[in-house]
Amino acid sequence: MNNRPVHEDYVAPNVNIFETPEGYTLQAEMPGVGKDGLEITLEGTEITIVGRRTPETTAGEALFRERATADYRRVFELDPAIDTSKVSARIEQGILTVTLPKSERVKPRKITVD
Amino acid sequence: MNLLRWQTPGLTAFAGLSSLRNEIDRLFDAPLSELGRASQFLTGSAPALDVYEDKDNFVVKAEVPGMEKEDIDVNLHDDILSISGERKKEKLENAQTHRTERFFGRFQRTVNLPAPVVAEKVSGQYKDGILTITLPKAEEAKPKQIDVQVN
Image (cartoon, rainbow over all chains, first blue to last red; front, side):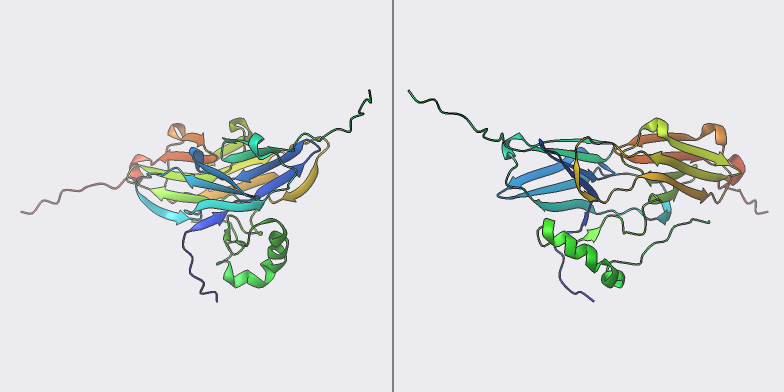
C-alpha cells in the first residue's frame, strides 16, 4: 500500500502522440474541460498540460457515479528538435490537440567562393 | 439498476499488472507516473457515466470526448436508455505513432432507469465531450405530497 502523500488530486489523461517529419501532434482526452480550463506550460525540456474541469451543478442526488472528479495533468519530455516558440493548442469536445513543430532544419548550402 | 461496466477498485490493487505500462511511461513522462490514470486499461469501450435524480428528472452524464454530435446514438426503449456510437480512427499521413492510449471503435452503455420517463420530452446536450441527457419523469413517478386529514 503506497502511503506517499499526494498534494494535488490529478488524473492523467489518455494521450495519442504522433510524429511526422514536420513535428509532433499530441492529443489528450479531457472530457469536461473547456478552453478556460486549460493550462499548458513549457519549461526547459518539459511540457505540462493541465485541464481543469468546468464546474458542474447538477440538481438532485447521485444514483450512480463513475466519472472522475479530479482535474487532468500530465508532463512530457520534449524532443529537442521541437521549436518551442511555435507550439500551439486547441481543445474541441474534450480533446486537446497540441501541435509541436520541429525547428527548421538547416539545409546544407553551397558556399560560393569569390 | 443494471449497469454493465467492470470497474477496477483502485490503482494500488492492480499495481502489479500496471507495472509494464509504468516502465514505458518513464521513458516519456517526468517521474509522475504514479498519478492515477483517467481510465484504466480495462475500460475502453465503455464510457464512464453518472446518473442523477431530482424530483422531476433523471440526468445521465456520459464522457464521450472527441465525437461529432451526429455520431452519438441515444435510444430510449421501455425505460432503458442506451448510448452508443463509433469513434473513427483518424488517418494521419506519414506519421509515426509514439503512443496510442485513446480508444477507437464502437462503444455502448445501457442504463435501466428506475422509474418511467416521458420519452417525447427527453433532451440531450453535448459539450466539452460530455453528453448530458435529461429525462423527465412520468407523472406517476414523481413524488406526491398527500394531505392527511385528521378529524
